[in-house]
Image 1 (cartoon, rainbow, N blue to C red):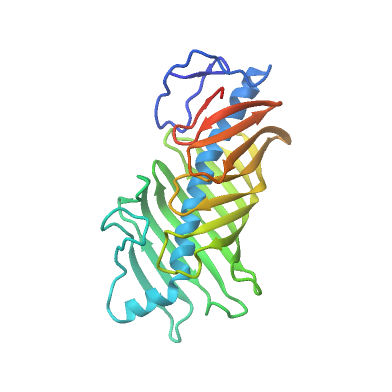
Image 2 (spheres, one colour):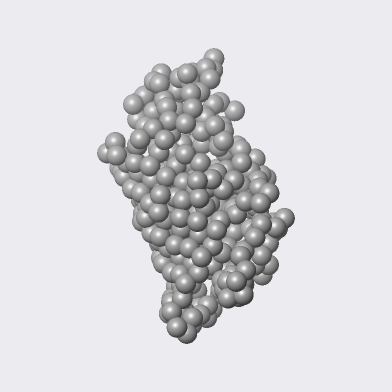
Length: 294
């Protein structure tokens, strides 16, 4: 089992890590260093899951008119090669609306398992309530996540999505989520994030060309009593069907003290990020939630 800072560190309860010969030291205070690593790697998982579910909502809400027309004709949204799901897998979609068309509710049901081409597994239900036509003055979306799974993470909560009235590529997402991790720990996390569609918004039925930039912050409290804040100091980039954030820098503070900075890279799709603490750098495997000397 992997040893980090001289303590046994179990991240997310997903798997046991292999031993490494070099002991990693992120500072003189071993307890704080272990806590810094645990919080940073947990936040990596939460960021990945939050980005995944926000993208699902935005993709289908952007395609609202197409989905509604199919629904009126008695047809169902079906898998195509332009989607990021494995063959013949995509959520079941149900649409309800008031007389006149709005408010409108889109329910996305991923069942027990909807698998992406990256191997990530989505499950559970997302409900999207759309207030009115896209360019109406009070247009917004209220989104509810009910026992929604991203791999081994379980998410419950809601978010409000509001829009820039002049630039429709921008949207602000204010969220209040409770995450249940595989090891039984819960994290209550509020956030305010701004999404900007860099590429792909005009192709509403194609997920292969989507590139999104994310800024903002989150505040979180774990069931272990830790309270921390994450700031996106350089915009995060989510690219097409890459499993990982490909670019951007975040900083995490615990009780007002900066405990880590995480650099996701230069835009290449890979599983490596660089963690910096007290001037020292370490390599993070985003897939394994693993830290080592570069």
